[in-house]
Length: 187
Image 1 (cartoon, one colour):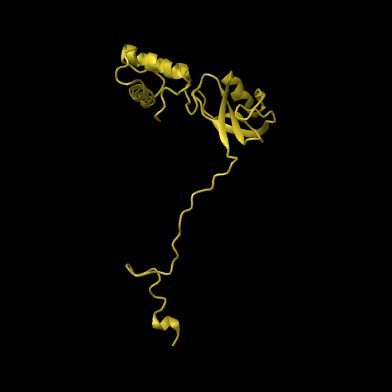
Image 2 (cartoon, one colour):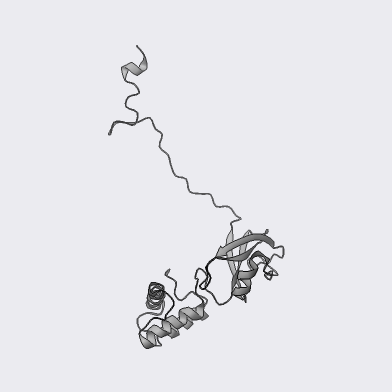
């Protein structure tokens, strides 16, 4: 008679409530090193139509130094695609990497908030139209415009409190001047 006939291995993972022979797997958090990769975004004046036509051949200006460690040895780190309103295909943006601190610098057109496809002027005019005329602007989906408006209201209540009397557009401008994204959902 073999071990299989006696039923020694029958219980392996099949019966509930009985111990199995599978080892417990513990999740170990990743070890943080001294040199971590950091993302940084630089905004440059860019004509989007020229960027769309040129693609990778567009002459991006190279930053003179890394703002994190002041290193001057910046290497090309390839390209990344980003979507913008008015274009049916993603545009190609240039990236650089600082070998000294590991920071990745991503170049982006000026006049756009990071992680937003619409320009700052379009977002502000949408909010202004809603405040003054109680209507959304034509050409942009209503749900996107509601997202911007509700996010701005939530941000004003969180940071400027309910006693803010200068108005919604003044709050938008104040957040923009302070370097924050006025219509960001994160608080």
